[in-house]
Length: 293
Image (cartoon, rainbow, N blue to C red; front, side, top):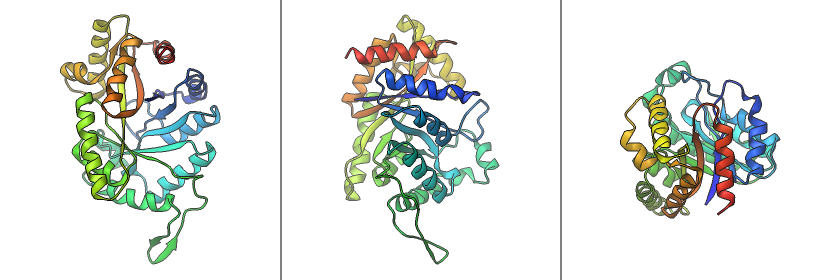
C-alpha cells in the first residue's frame, strides 16, 4: 500500500511547497492535487500546484487527481504533463477525469458538458500517442511532442461509474474511484481488468481518493464527515459515510486504508476532512500512524 496526501484547495497556494515537503518528511509516498476552472470555492490548477510541490521535494510521486481532460486540447495536456514530468525528474503521474459537477465551468471554457465523456475518450488516445513520442496527424501535418517526458507517464483514470472503469481498462494504468466501499473497489477493478485483457493491455492497478475524517472519537469523526461532504456534494451523505469514508482516529483511518488495500487499492490518496484549523495536525497524526505500521 502506497499512501499519498491530497494537497488542500486553498485561496493562498504559497504554503504548498512547505506542506509538500512536510508530507515527504513524514513518509507519504505521493502528493496529489485536484483542479477546477470554476467551482464556487478556491480551487487551483493541478499542473501549477504540483510544479510548486516538485520544487520542494525530491522523492514523492506527484499525481494530478484529477486533471479535467475534456477542458484541455489533448496536445496541451500532453505538453503540460511532459513538462511537469521533466521538472520533477520523472515523478509525475497524470490523473484524468471527466468532471461535470459544475457545468458552468464547461460553458465558460467553450466545451459542451454533455460531450465530456466522448471528448475524454478521444483525448486519451491522442494524449497517449504524444507522450509515447508517436507522430500525430493534424490537418494532414505530422506532429510530435518535443521534449518528451523522461519515461512513461502513468495515467490514472478517476471516477466510480462503469464508464470510468471501462475507460481505465482501455487506456489507463490505474483506476481511482472515490466514495466507494472496499467491495465496490474490488468489483470495479475486476471490470477494468476484464476490459484491459480484452484490449491486450497489462493489468490495471487500483487507487482510491479517500476522503477521511479525523476526530478524537468515531462518532465525532462521523458527524464531521457527513456535514463536510454534504456541503461539498450537496446530497445526503449519512449512509455513504458509513460504507465509504474512513473516519475516527488516525489509527482507525489507517486501518481502514488497509481494508481498501486488501480489496486492490494499492495507491490511496488521503484527503483530510477535519475541523477548522486541524488540517496540519491531521497530516501529522496520519503520518505517525503510517510510520508505526
